[in-house]
Length: 542
Image 1 (cartoon, rainbow, N blue to C red):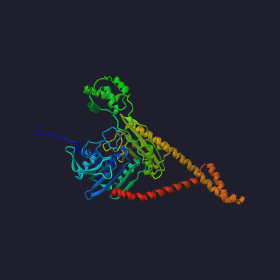
Image 2: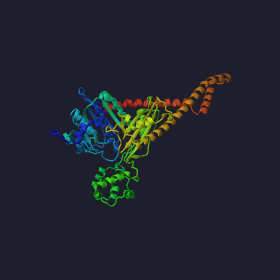
Image 3: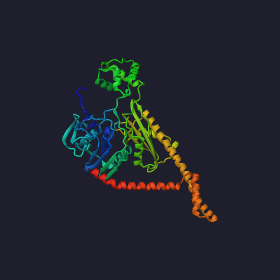
Image 4: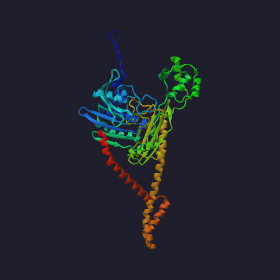
């Protein structure tokens, strides 16, 4: 129609994400506060354990203006720190991150901190405070920053530097957002418990208006840090091929494949090029658009590539997984397994699973599920997760589980690319290869549980016999003592020896050992409780 004019405008990445902050889970004050804690803690753990540093993370939430629902979130770590010149871009420029490399990260998009800052600017219009010092730095750097959403650039409001007298290293951030602590409290507490479950080597201090938590380091053993890798030939797309060609257009196709892709040697490259009917000596810079598309398609179709290496991954490991579960859930029995590396679409992944039973796990009508992706607890969208689907497909009666039962299923998937259902990163998509590995891992643990339950049933059966024999032994000993004129206690002792020999178990001695162990454990917990809270409170205040 005449007279109508369509107006066009350009949005910077920062402005686009500010308008679409819901993609990062910042949907309301409750979820936003939880997401803020999660994003900053993820960054802290990545900045420590990935570099062989035992994590110490301090978190503090305070009311700034309770009537407006404004809260401040402070998170500090002892990680590798950020160089002075990088701090403004790391926190003030969308799509600027250290996470755009092929290796396992907790974060995926490198957007977490920036999304929080954009949310803060949209709700409280307050800047972020950053303090950081790289390892070995003789100075500590402080910045007060905001993001220029129109230009996608950092706005430096203040910058300070001062001597690093005590050799501190790490990063501390403080941001003021609109958040509902009262409603987010339960989720945040559960998130921290689950983080400690998957990372028992971390020490976590947490202080909020009406809650103080301390999670002591349970072990000094760290999982192996992930290495940086190359793209797998099956995971490529046209734009990636163009990007790699631009690095060195003078390489031949054969040299290009060997140089830039994982697991491609001389023989593999030659076999692929012969199969794809491509000239191995042709320069990649001379490829036409159609030839690049053809090359990409054939790389994805070829079945002769090696499987992706798992060097880029950092699984928790069975030992640490069991340690974390015991500390948090305090079960009667736990079994864990770390599966061998597998892959989907050229992306390597490893599935770890554990089953915890009894103890302090409450009975429920369905298994209680704890989900993790790249060591990050997933608390929302459980119904959309592939783990829930797998757990519901298992016939638990095969493993002697009768509901309601005190059963918890723990699943951890680590990969260079987790296939999340949505940008909120709270549920893993239903990918066939991952689903199969999860099923195999859970079933392997379930078989161990069945063996344990079978053993317990046999013990209970023997105990019933033991109790019955013991009951009659008292009367028999009394009668024999009357007839033989021998001491009743001596006869009872001999009868007890016969019962133990017959059943193969001395329940009285076993019960005494268990009681002694419980007493010692209670004393240790009392001693730890008397010394740690003060430390936690002091650290939280700092």
